[in-house]
Amino acid sequence: MAVLETIKGPGDIRRLPKDQLATLADEVRQRLIDVVSSTGGHIGAGLGVVELTVALLRAFESPRDKILWDVGHQGYPWKVLTGRNDRFPTLRQAGGLNGFLRRSESEHDIFGAGHAGTAVSAALGVATARDLKKQDYSVVAVLGDGALTCGMSYEGLNNAGHSDRDIIIVLNDNGMSIAPNVGAINKYLGSVIASPFTNRVREKVKGVIELSSKYLGHGVVEFSRKLEESAKNLWSPGMLFEELGFRYFGPIDGHDVDAMVQTFEMVKTLKGPRLVHVITQKGKGFPMPEPDLEKYHARQPYDPVTGKLKSATSGLPAWTKVFGDAITQLADEYPDLVAITAAMPSGTGTNIFQKKWPERFFDVGIAEGHAVTFAAGLATQGIRPICAIYSTFLQRGYDSIIHDCAIQGLPVVFCMDRAGFVGDDGQTHMGLYDIPYMLAVPNMTVTAPRDGAELIGLLRCAMGHTGGPFSLRYPRDKAPAEPPVAAEVPPVKYGTWEMLRSGRQCAILGVGVMCGPAVAAADALKSDGLDVSVVNARFLKPVDRAMLEALVQNHTLLVTVEDGCVVNGFGAYLAELVQTIAPDVRVIALGAPDKTYEHAPRPQQLADVGLTAEGIAARIRALHAEEAAVS
Ligand SMILES: Cc1ncc(C[n+]2csc(CCOP(=O)(O)OP(=O)(O)O)c2C)c(N)n1
Image (cartoon, rainbow, N blue to C red; front, side, top):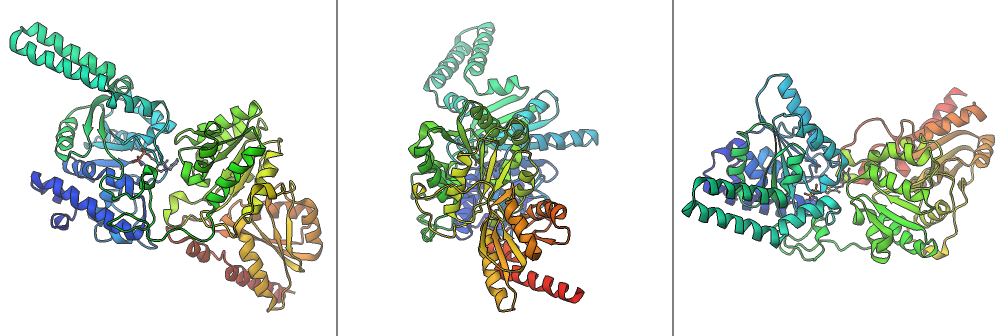
């Protein structure tokens, strides 16, 4: 790492002899492979942009020039080269570097992200601010071809392309989203680059120009040049971007540092909206033991030489797998059931469904709003769509949930993986807001299973419910038990809770996986002489009115426990109801207080806010002590 050791920031890269840039890139690549082998993380995207990062930092002057990365998951080389190499081994660890880029971490991180599709809009904002303030610097947005499946990217391109602002878009085209990219734009970029016909035509035209410049006059040379230009326009991906108002450069080899530096040096001297198209290979240089390209994207700790995962996954299945298996089995019984993912087949477990039911599976790209409205369209015709989208990414689809599903009473089922604290992905990926946002939607049924069997039972219930949308949430975790096969699980009765422990005075209402610690807390409180009820509040909306009315007869305190934001959460919703039927009963809501949360292991995040058996028990002891003091 002789060259990398001399790099303390972008200035050192600009001072480096040109012939050492490729060596620097090689060393950065090795550093990524070494460090991520013990931290785990998004290795594939970073390895694909090592040379691109070096070239950008060579040709532009960060942070004076503003370089914005879409998503930020490909930002590991950027961190290593912008003064964070020493701290790089703390990546995704509690108190260490974040897995994405964020403004608070470095002056070089101009715009934080985690969700895809924001780079063009944010860069246009920065460029517009520069012009309003009459300043002078370059603004560069780097986005992947996957981000071109996001509507937001086009909204930004449409706005930027005709703005005449000085803005440079770098399209990092590797043909991959997390899974192989999908849709028309992918076909368009891929076929033009790969087409032997296009290349042959270009070569022929080039030959004609060379010949004509030797033997023929100026007019013919000009004509030939025009011919080349038309050939380029006819068959080049540039045509699309040129029509959108960008001057197009490329495609260029995204692993050739010199070629990219040269292109950026030239492009930055021009004016107006420009787009540089670079072709890269995701995961370049990774010693990949599996043929599955998707496994490059993010990886648990691995052996840096063989790439093999350090710990083979064993033990209880993840919720994601329980869900994937469940819908795959249920599809046998429900011929109208289809599954939709927004670019996350393996993340949501719908890849399991895809294998068995390819014609009933739809990957719509990174397009959550579209996914929801597409599902609503399907539902109008009697199809039963299951939209499997992470809690955090479904935030993008909120208008479609209300406007297209709820108002029209359409039975779309939302299965939200990664609900609650998400561990080392950190603040941009937290699934803490779905309970408040789903509870606020009219006609929405809001549920949370406490284990895999209940997930299956609730899915059956959802398939039998035609009166409007239906949501389920489960965390980024292992399920508490091995689930039975779907055929053995009856539907959960709509709108019902389950009494897990029957006590007096205080009742804990657990939401989903919080039932486990709630029961353990009740057990612990027995030794304090407290006889506490525990209810599995699997329907957050509608609540089990009969059980609630029975509870308020012999309990003076209801404690709700939810792995989600406490503001406008289940506790708040219940408190409002209880106020109308039993104003003397107190409702105390335990959950995540109103703030952002840093990356750390999920158990630590839960413990920090008291969402453990000990935390719940301690809170109830304190509440009882308070009550005793008052009475
Ligand atoms: C709104 C949103 N949906 C889904 C994701 C999950 N996700 C993270 S990276 C990624 C693929 C991005 O593909 P691309 O932009 O081509 O970048 P690459 O990984 O290929 O470098 C996806 C789908 C996300 N970050 N944001």
